[in-house]
Length: 437
Image (cartoon, rainbow, N blue to C red):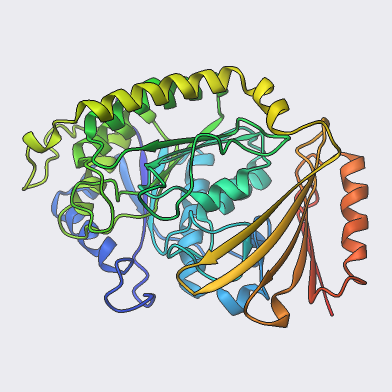
């Protein structure tokens, strides 16, 4: 069945980490050429839109930028995020059935606190888009299926305490690839346990394995969660020709995945095989989202022999299915085991910004709560100087009175505790307050 599909392109001509860096404008230029050459924009159900500009208010619903947005965010980031908001508006107003934001720079490695760029990412596009949708359109339950080869550790961090967002990440095993995380026991905070689902796959997993995981793990979880909206973090570096990963997915497989997943919104993440993969993958995804024939999508160097998956990978994925589905069924018992009954839970972390060479130490405390998803207090310091020492207080949507009282007290204490900045992010009232020494 044909669907109205919106496309938003933004190659970010003026933004590159270095001129030859894998994350550069050519990632989208070849795709744009392919879309034109294949005549995709000639279909009456495929329409291109120009990106809007994200505002500080959009960013402040999700991130704590240190020392501020102006110091670490480029205009290209604002337009890239704005492209996802344009796509969201077109879907939510019913102008299109689904939309694909083909924008860069990418975002799923960006944590809630941002001291700089890591994993080529500065702003988490999907998280900003989701909170924009919730604020503007009132949607509650949203699922994010991240198909990037690298674990979406930034998205996991942001959604860690959010029971209304199911975050599922399909990625290459973190023991073999950056960022070294994304294991099945990483399942969410005390008020949202089970809302994080990690599906690490062995290197050289083929199309057969990806679609097995989709059909036998991802789709059953989505059927049970029943989201109002599905978002695909559409990273494309699982492709067999990608220069910085070790997987063996295909362009046709990506099209099949999107056909079965039926995302309302797709957002481009990674993918660095600029000529050999991205034009074919993106064309296949667009055709699948639009309900058009993608059966002839095939790379010039495709080899059926290379798509024969080893038996040990197949066996592992079956074990992953059994473990994941059992953990999903038993998540309440597992939560009690992971988080003993106490009023607060704390985690200490050291976070490395590999793109900007920044080291951050962070202590995060969440209030255990049965009424809401819990207020969160983060104390953070980076090795960039005195201005990096901050205290960030987060109040979730539908925040209960007890969490609000505790969080407000923590914010007020920040004035006397010597932090350079103290932040109060109040999603319930859509406000963002900064106090500076």
